[in-house]
Image 1 (spheres, rainbow, N blue to C red):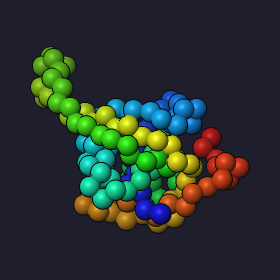
Image 2 (cartoon, one colour):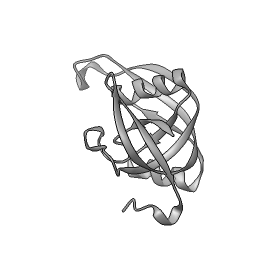
Image 3 (cartoon, rainbow, N blue to C red):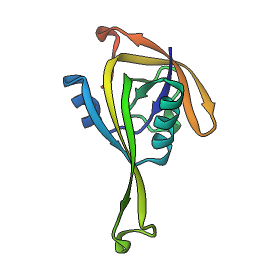
Image 4 (tube, rainbow, N blue to C red):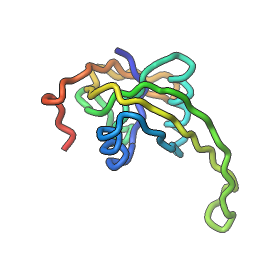
Length: 127
């Protein structure tokens, strides 16, 4: 199956998603925000991984999730903390589908889309 890759997801978030299959995650990475938009537009699943997006390749393991809903928010930040005054945050409600392993990676603009094979729990090694 095809899935849009969300990279650099905190291990804590992945662990919580394994315990509770429904979760709202907050994404601040511009690449991940754009990836969620693509998943919404093309009705694709999400592939969430701890690995940075640059390291995702054939064999990368992660979680497969359905995107239930997503909304973007503009948040103001104190100007003393950053050169920018606003950041875009995306809150995505996801439902865990299972475990997966990347079979093939393709770039679509700056977003990674992968062919992912769903795994059985005993095949997963997310050390």
